[in-house]
Length: 418
Image (cartoon, rainbow, N blue to C red; front, top):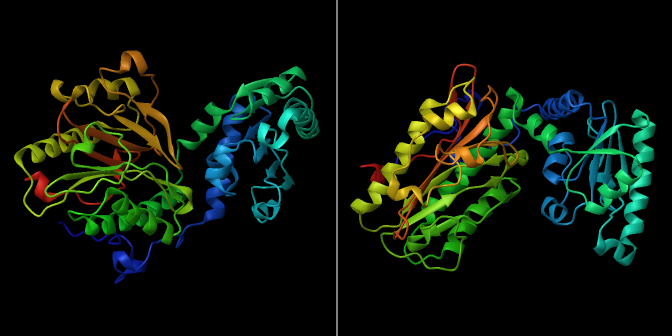
């Protein structure tokens, strides 16, 4: 395996080995990151004449103000906490008993306890609770920005939005301004992305070292998760590690299957890592002890060709349509099992934009422009329909003023590229 010094560009870490530490916060102005992100959200609100945003997605709350609290729980139990954003004031409505977690952020002006308008919390009084929630929220918004403000909402109960509309509020979807805010990263924000990637690469290195015939997929995947958590990453968003025949088709979740001899093991990291930033690269390994077969090498080399070709064509100013037209055309025998995207945006999770394969663009694609500051993941899955194995590869990049920079640095497998 190729050896790689992940810290080669850092003079302040000379002599520190990869497994010694994760560069989690060193040299990052996190307050500047938070101010930048809030500024992006407010600018996108202003473009659309949105007077207030009510944000309940825990990832978007963290993006906008920096506060983190039980993200998986809150994603499943919306709206247990939510953030009200206006042009000049932010109020975090925090989960009951957790108000202290919102203190100390320069991006949060006030913390109040949330009113959970869900059936679990309110039972048969849900409709009344939703109407009460709407009345109190409209009163607060009117106090902050005046009556008649256009209000952006996301991921609240339908009843809450209906109650808001019933009070005469113009409710719009909050997805567009938030996604457009998130898609451009500042230089300081990119440091968070890179810190998360470096920690995830440490974890993938440990996973790779643990590969052996006889270990189960679950046990192998747990190596990744343990290392991510130990380095103060957040969680693995998916369970996309599979082996042998379970690598084809893709999207088979990690299971109790025992890895056999001379099989492929495919991994998509999907790690919400340090500072909440997504580390999203894919690699495929070989379990040994023998050498990869010709068929395994062919699958790997075709996937590698797809990734390299599509990395080579990306440039700032390119339209999504142009990218789709120029992207690598998947050979017919692999087309049915193709990955559903050619590339996608990435930040704190997968995000805007989605870039589609040429064949899928007429039905699913939309146009836009690839811009400097976008971080993207370039994807490949290669496996024949009904085939015995498949290969998943993916690289994470940032678009610069002149081209791209590859951010993910975990090596590819020399034995499968020969």
